[in-house]
Image: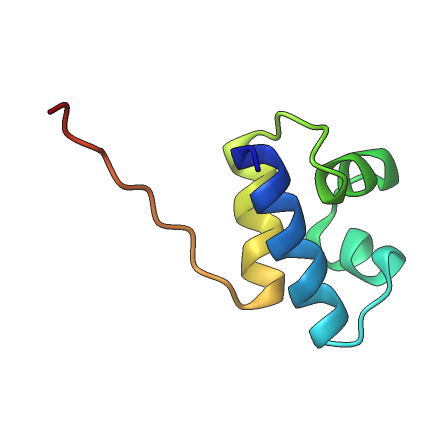
Length: 70
């Protein structure tokens, strides 16, 4: 699974866990319907700003790790 797909699935699963509709998340995070829909399908290169808004609403923490070359 690609990173975009993994992120989209995490967002979708958490939204459903919270019993939120896509429209609710769009309103709370102030992102467009196309943005959220494509994100959940793993078909969007989302901006960090929008990803931060969405994760904040969902109570998720965004952590970036740098992998060292071997």
